[in-house]
Image (cartoon, rainbow, N blue to C red; front, top):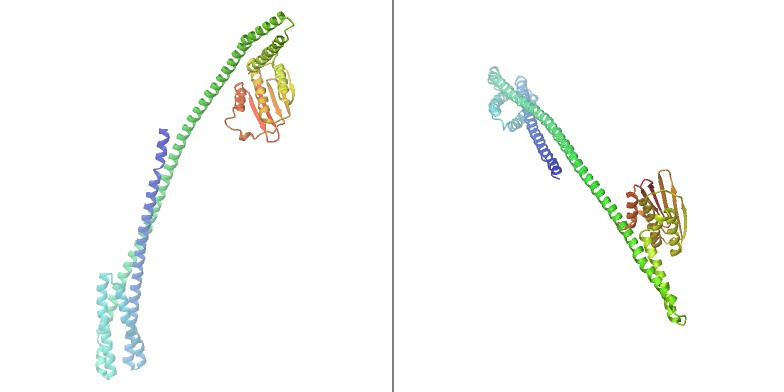
Length: 441
């Protein structure tokens, strides 16, 4: 049992390992997910930054175009794109500041571009007011200077720097996503390998457990067979002892009790012959005593025959079965038909057949409520067949109680002689006792 328990304990080891592998796989996947999520947010912010910068440059270009058109033509329609651009610039700057609020390096560039945008807007607003006030020389002077161009160049340069930083952030986010995917790939591969190793270990432990259990079962089967053989041998021995005791008791009854009853009967006959005939009462008592002694002798003979049928020794098996059937028929009132062939068997085999028929008739008389019985004995080349069949109420063979030792004893007696016993019965259809016994038994 110790060898069986160790693999069973080892079989539990893959479970914690499997839980550990599952936990590691969940951790790796969660880490990859969080990294990818952060990288996606970073890429999205970078794209939004680039979009805001492009929109800012476009708005500055629209505002400058509207300003130049108005200054050159004085047409108020040119101020419409200028006014629209001016209305959206502040919102765009606020949106850009919100996007890059967590990036210190980008905030520094944003401060510069915001300052240059303010200067450019002031410059454009100043020229437009001068144009409206009719200060032609003043706005032309401002327009011909390089101040506006320098401010626009600075805005474009700082916008390009912000765009470059956002591109770098986007590349970093893409690299993080690649690393997360690579980490998930490696983690899944390692977990799959670990799962295969755990499964292989589980199979090895299962095989070890199976082999250990098989050895244990084989050992238990061997013990069961040995115990069964010992019990069968013991039962056979007890059966032989019982038959020997019955034979010894039969001889004692036949010799001792028979001699006593016979001597008593002779003494009664001697007394009767010496009594005068004028004592009718005494003669009647002696006659009754003689009848009683005759009944005792008959009872003794029947008991002796039941214990150890002398007819087996003196008359053979067939004659003994005929006598057994006839006496049972007279006692029970049942109709018995016999079909018995002459066979040559040893003493033990003859006794087995006789006891089988005797036990069958006893069971029929007790339980079957039959009216007809058929007893047959067939002589084959290497074996004999004995069959007892009745037309009684029958029974369910599968419902025979374990404490029904009659059928068990019959079966053991036949199997001890190397034979095979079959009991066939159905409720309402009678019972058939069928036995095959080798002649060498």
